[in-house]
Image 1 (cartoon, one colour):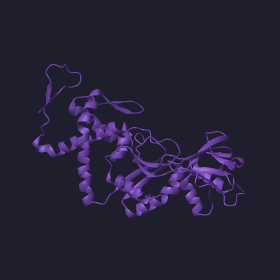
Image 2 (cartoon, helix red, strand yellow):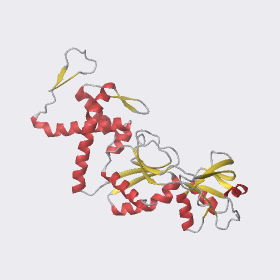
Image 3 (cartoon, rainbow, N blue to C red):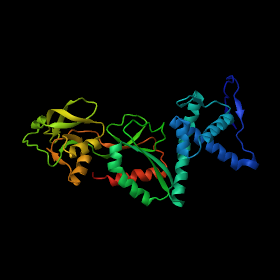
Length: 325
């Protein structure tokens, strides 16, 4: 027997709830209870019925039905729903804090057993900036899918901000600082910016400051004239220089910048990974490579540490693939 207060009941004598199961139906009832509680945890964690449904691999109607059944079992309203998101009531928040660790432990235990008895399967939803996704991830995704034939990928390559929880994304590639406090980030590779040009560009400089005479391809949103503060040397002997440069073309995608620079439309300050690819194909050459614009690394980002095995496999695969970059 567990004693608890029902919603709207006076706080005099608590109303006892008998959670003993009928013997003839015990296994089915226990499974329903577990599914209902696990569904509630995912809804609160992801703040969306649709996102929880995608994560659990069930229809949205099933999620709604499980929530209603759990509220009926507990005789308590657990969530508020509006057009944009789902939030916990005060009772729902307390219940969530009471059960979330137990649900995560149970999910981990089940995943461990399944890992030892079955091949990993299911869909992984991944997002990345368009240029990084096309340039960096596609070859590794192809190899990953060949290794794990029962796993499928849902890829979203976009330069807009993606809310991982609201859009049901399992894994993201992010360049720069990760500011959302509830996300987990793992460094993948450095992303310092360096200068590059077309191999046939008519650029004659003995000092980096002389580059101010030449046109640049600039990243959009910072004006036709921009100031770059570049650095070189170790921490003990670091030097810096400021370049005021003028743009001939502005773009909002570093992959497009690399293509324009490779076509001879100006000098570009871009992530090292683009220069490395252009150098490999003979379409770009570094300029003053000892100078760089330091930047935060590229990260793998995910919304929870309690990951399905298929997502953990992809994270480990990409981390190994980019080790040493």
